[in-house]
Image (cartoon, rainbow, N blue to C red):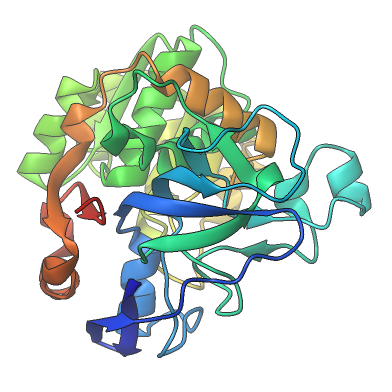
Length: 337
């Protein structure tokens, strides 16, 4: 099979690789499309140390089942359209028993752990328990969006978002877009978005958000005089975290889901004196992932996809994203030739 390989930091290459061997309980999947995640881009540049040269990345994917485990009995079938929950949890620890498989202390993540079969390849192996069926009527490309959409939904749930809330999303990249859609899905009264890129700001408006410059305190007070109930920081640097805190009402919540800096500082008095809550969000529970897949079956997701590139053009797509990451929404790599 052909795979997209992190040849070295700053360079991807298309290389032949063996079709992955299946372990007990694994299915073999024929990959259709895989999205380029911001974390893949950080792996490409080498800036976060979570990917290594020589590995195949990729975890935002949609596929068809090529083979099921011998003797398998269950809801999955060969040629079924599916996506993958990329979190491989132990299933036995206290967090897993409580339904918080995303907090499993020994979790591994498809596309991050180099020992695990991953999705920038024509085929991958995955445990049947991580395979999530999709509506047969769903546009296949939309299946590759379930994972980032689930991240945005988890961030909203983490913040305790409820119908009628006023919400601010800082950053309208793919995760910010997912957070906007999650707020709409939950029934937020207003969704404000702060995003400097004109193209991303325009896209956020089509998703139902109201643009605002949240870094301008006076304008923010005009837009939300009492502050918002929840702010989701989908950027993740000190400046945006501070902005999120000052834009949130006393007693409100700030969810940090952006990961653009490994260390951030924050105005502590804005937390303690106003009794705000700061929460981290990384990835979804399995229930949240599956619920997102069901919701996405009837959602208009076309605006989230910037373009689809063939496998042969994927190395250039990575290079272009690294040179100008703020201009694109989601780019999908097609393996469906």
